[in-house]
Length: 366
Image 1: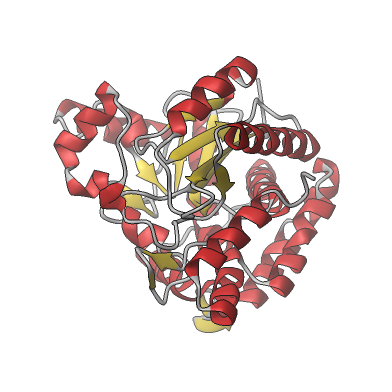
Image 2: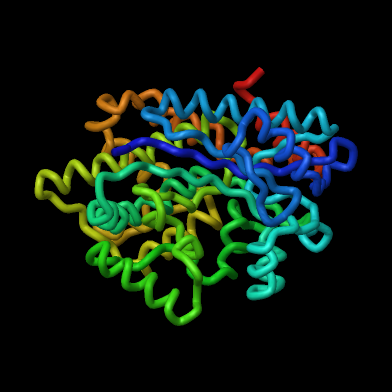
């Protein structure tokens, strides 16, 4: 049984090094990558997107090794095809209408059902799986962890541009994805049975054909014994990905620890947590979130410090103190969105922003 193990999936952009636009050549990367990476590299609906995923990792150090190895391999495969790889939640200026769709029956059905909502979903995320001991424990953890999702999301914001426009959001990726059904913060579920009944009803009534079409910001995975965090933009740097994964793992462990001690973390209503998610998307770490206990606005960095304190008693057992405390560096240097905007403000050139993202994507590899 894989309790509190980690699995990390990152979605990357394939970039033309001359035009800096997205290039729909993912299939060549996947075909080349499967010789070496096997199931750890796969195609996505848009041909300009390539996803890599780690094996099951037993600690954050293993996860770092895997993430670093996968980024290195995919960057080298791209270079052989005269392509670059970029890690950001949206491309700064490429238009979704110009992108090719991967030939696949599943994608064909999705586009037939959702039309331009699916076609325009040209976004790039980070998904982190944390192993759990049972589905009932997983539901309890999911209910509690929802409160912290906007805190984590604010740190990951890395998509300020869309189709050549400065959107005014630190994460426009979530605004694009919000057009899909069954997205955002999930409701409270009293048990795994209630959760499974909900999925069964959707399947029975033709809303979905399986539980993977539940695209919430956090979900109990329908096929694996994991909680899957899905809220984050893909970060530019490996260090940022590992920090976010370490915090997610620590949160799951802390909530499980409290539960085992018959202590509960107060669950908050979805509509309240969604208010904080909107603020995180709009302002990243530079805005304020609502402290619902105090019923007042608080600077986002203050609540992120509180989050670090909340998990402090579990990070040493996990061996992840250094990785979790990298969040202090993230608060200091700004999120990916802050840094993209800084480059654009300096240069006025979105191609320079793409160059910066490409450079940051390989940071820590070479």
